[in-house]
Amino acid sequence: MFLGELEKQVLQYLWSSPGVDVKHVHAELSKQRDSSLNTVQSALERLFKKGLLSREKQGHAYLYRAEIARDDLIARLIDSVASDFVSKGENSLIAAFSSVSTEMDEEQLDQLEQLIEIQRQQLKKGDSSAD
Image (cartoon, rainbow, N blue to C red; front, top):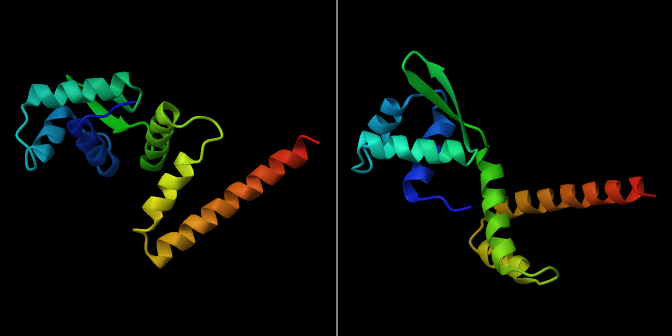
């Protein structure tokens, strides 16, 4: 999955302000970039077609909200890139995470360690239920 810069900005805005129409999104994003209302509308439509947004008709306008949580989108994007470049059993993905972790502070590393431990516990539960 590929996301353009405008699509990323739209998602960032909708995570903090769900249930807004194209005019509100355009007004907010025009503070950062010069995009027409039609360009923002096109970005919203692309994100909707990708399944990343939902919309609800209210009067003459659609109200948009993100359909995917930020963490879930990041995981999906990482998985997409990894499946394009990393073969099964290859350690490139682990090496990439290790490289990124050099920029983390102590608290972030602790959080990562906790998440890894949770994943290990879930794997063990899966293994024991398969018995």
